[in-house]
Length: 209
Image (tube, rainbow, N blue to C red; front, side):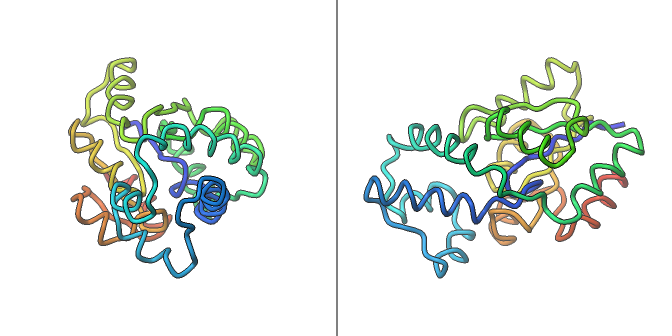
């Protein structure tokens, strides 16, 4: 049986509106360009580097903004909800004996707080925080080494182009979901192994591979 690694924000939890709100708070403080509702469709079609360039955020400030953003996220975590249908997906995978873990750029503390708030404390084998925005492949490689497994024995489920790129570097199969941060056409640019549009389709895909 394969081990499934889930991304968190955008894949399991619907946090896009909150992250836009938090970004705009920091943008006002640092005098960056704010994100308007009319910007969202275009931004979803751009890579992170392209978004940063469009919004005029200095690259050197990104690490500091991520740290500040995680703190603000923690203060607002009770407002977040799991993506409709995903709690059922995790429960059904567990009932089939499938091992599931989370590997995310968010902090472990934030993820565990959310899971506790949503009565999902024991749903995942491990919670792994990828410290670097573009360093998920390092974290996935470390997990494979710790678990003594190979890329073919794992599947990653994510919602961003950078998730696909990280998995491609390691040969780990990836299922890209279209309800998260990146638009379907941007995800397709990365060439995911599977592209799914609903939690039900995700469950069928995961049980079939």
